[in-house]
Length: 345
Image (tube, rainbow, N blue to C red; front, side):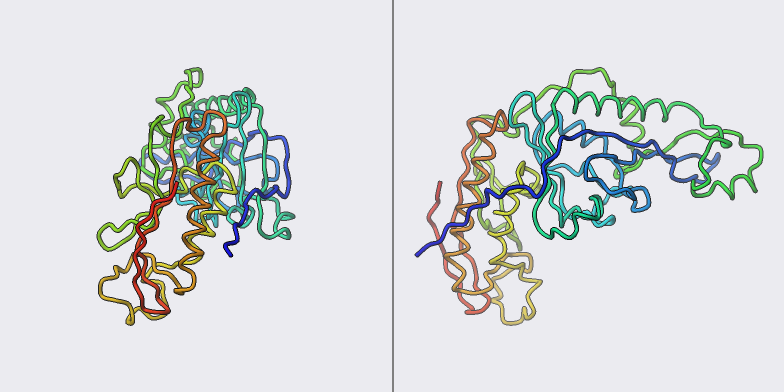
């Protein structure tokens, strides 16, 4: 008998959402001349009170993108630009269920450093924040204006917080500098965040767009590509650039995705790779047990169906088809390699 698992799980907590922030000058970089680093520290319902100390900041560009299109966004990230460095292992899942609402779903375990410590005792699950779209957009525009104002005006050193890294050294060794300019916005992943910020207009129209064009075919499966498997194929093509999770809007999709992959592991991560067939690439997925084969494919079908349902919500991606493809997978325990060729809608 095949048992189908449902991931229509209720959130641990649902609250009205708002976007707020604290403009922060985190440190002084001693270049010629010295300059300040600018950050926006997040403030939101269920947010932790110690985000600055934990190096967690708003990514204003991701926030703007989340207005335009639903999807998974690292709106909360590390000040260095690499979210896992701050212990943030999952993006925020953003849906647009209707024209007047934006919903965030935050994985408690994956985003634990950013969330109120009281949520840690709940273990697995997610928190849901529901925003009125007009207010959501207004908050993000206000954040953008605040960053633009801060970035364009020199800052008097006497007004700087004593916690600004490097301030004591500046006062002792550069007494003639009574003000500093902003030359960096964090996160600064590609080195041009401040320049990108200064090109933005907080009053420009942010047009809503669907996640995928109508008529797109999305297939999930274990598709061979060199020495690895890709998990998503769009209109019959592998890009090598896509990761399925970028397109999740609901926590139940994330849960279904993890359930699908729970039956497999990358070949390089197995305790013993010497017993694997030489045909298996180190980055390919392999079944942990032969007995998991059918369960894995059933989980894949459920995942594809869950994605399909999420894309049909509101104007997320109307007219898009999602299906699961049974693909050949090697079973590590049995040392077998069985092919599946059926494609399931």
